[in-house]
Structures are given as C-alpha cells and as structure tokens.
Amino acid sequence: MAQATVTYDSVMKELKARQFKPIYYLMGDEPYYIDKISNWIADNVLQPEERDFNQTVLFGSDVTAAQIVDAAKRYPMMSEYQVIIVKEVQNIKNVEPLEKYFKAPMPSTILVMCHKNGKIDGRKQAYVKAVQQAGVLFESQKLKDKDLPSFIERYLNARNASIDPKSTMLIAESVGADLSRLTGELDKVLLSLPEGDRRVTPQVVEDQIGVSKDFNGFELRDAIVNRNVFKANQIIKYFDENPKAGSIYSFLPLLFNYFQNLMIAYYCPQRNNPDALAKWLDFRNSWFVREYITGMRNYTGMKVMQIISKMREIDAKSKGLDNPNTPAGELVKELIFFILH
Image (cartoon, rainbow, N blue to C red):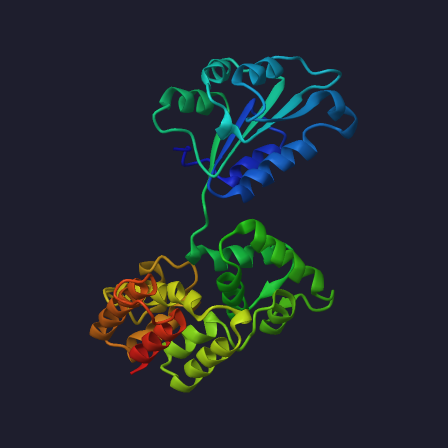
C-alpha cells in the first residue's frame, strides 16, 4: 500500500536534512521503525525550549479525528513548527475529518500518525491517496528471517563492531525477528566489547545473550547438514536433560526452513556455484549457501522430499493428530533419527 520508494532510510535522510512534510503516516507490523521515526521527530524537530507549547502527544483511543484536526490547525507559538504525534491511530473510528485535513494540511504543523500492527484499510483509497499527496505514507514491514543476518551485520558495523557468520546466525536464530528485542540484545553486546577489540564472537554471544555456543539450533542444523550423528545426538540429549535451556521442538521451524530451501536449491541451474546459488535462494551473502552445497552432497533430492513430508507428519502429531500420548521431545528425536539414517 505504501509507495515503493518510501523506505526507512529515505524518510530519515529527508528528516535529517530538515526537509519536513506536514504529515507522516507510519503503519505496519514492525513497530521498531515506526518508533525510530516518531522518536526522531519528537527529539529533533523542535528545540527543547519550544516543546512545552508546540509538541503534543495524543492517543487514538482518547481523541476523535475532529479533535486531532483542531489541534493540527493551531499555529505554533514562537516556533517555526508545531509537532503532533498521534499514537494508536488504529483506534480512531471516523477518519473523515482527517481525510479532509490531509487534502489541505497546515504547513507549520508536522502531524505524525502511528498505526502499529496493521495498516490503513485497503478500501479507503481516497484516504491513502490524500496521505501520499500531502506527506509520507510509510509501511514498516516485518523483517524476514533470511534478512536478519544482514541486519545484524549492518547494525554492528555502523557502530564500529564486526561479527563472524557463526555468531550472526547464533543471534538471529536465538533472538528472532523482533527488532526492538534484537537491537536491545545487540546494544548489550556492544557495551560489553572492549575498546581495543570490537569483534563479536560466539563466546561473546554466549556470555551476553545466554546462547550456548556448542548447544543451539545453529549447531544442530550444522550437525544435520554434515550428517554428524554423534554431535546431533549430543545436542538433542543436552536439551532433553536441560529443558530450561530451550525446547527441542522449537528447532523444527529452523530445520524445516533449511530443507525447504535445500529442495529449491536442487533446481538451481548452477547449484555448485555459491554466487549463483545465493542469487537463486535470494540470499545476500554467498557464505550462507555453503551449507546448502554441503547438504546437496549429503542428501539426495528424494531424501529431502521424504524429510519434508516427515516434518509435516511430526508437526501434525505434535498438535494431537493421530497421536494422543507421544510428547513433543520424543517426536523430534524420531524426526532427527529419520533425517540422519
């Protein structure tokens, strides 16, 4: 719904150049970028002494669209701009007054609409068009799992730190795609690094985030890719005996994603070429395709199809289908045995 050219970086570039628009409608399922943009506007558009009279925070559950418009039509006091930040926009019932305002907004008002965990109803095309013509319509989308490693690398590199691929995968797989939580963990890691050594290693990840560098989903997948039966069973045994460290069953999506991509890799015309395979799988870094080249050496296409089918069977059983008694842990052990033998 948002214009394809509107990205977080493009919005921030204009803001930092003080090229302000009268309306910023920030929507989407990823709150992180919505908060980053609205917080920057709140902290940087006005001088501290201007904010008392010219900066207002409203909540959609507490005000009507008409009240927001009334506030937006006020003139700033001893300031070039006034800033109005409206949170929980999704709770506003009748948006017709806002649509009319968007068609002729006050140039001295910067109205920021924060619509988290959703977006404008697709049927309200006139409303969308009015926002786009007057200001910025930005959709903050959830980051895909495959894009997490590059996000982690960029985040750390921008703060003068480096990270090896294994540590990147450990963080991505243990923390997940909640960017607010992920950046919080990365900031904790950054604070722990000494000035003379700004490298993030598996040991740093284990110490600061609490992910074992030896027993985790990344290592289990690595053992399965390389058909290392002993190591895979070691990891399964560890989690079976240490349930507080995590659920074995939580590794299933990670393994399913790998074998699903491995099946796709078989159709790549140049599947032994890392760069061609990375492009085929839509990976930004060819380092991550090495495990798929290894996987194609260790598993036939037929075996991969059987593994995917077995995973679906195990998933159904874990939800009680044709399985009244077997616990999830035993089901996962059954799956791992099937994969490796």
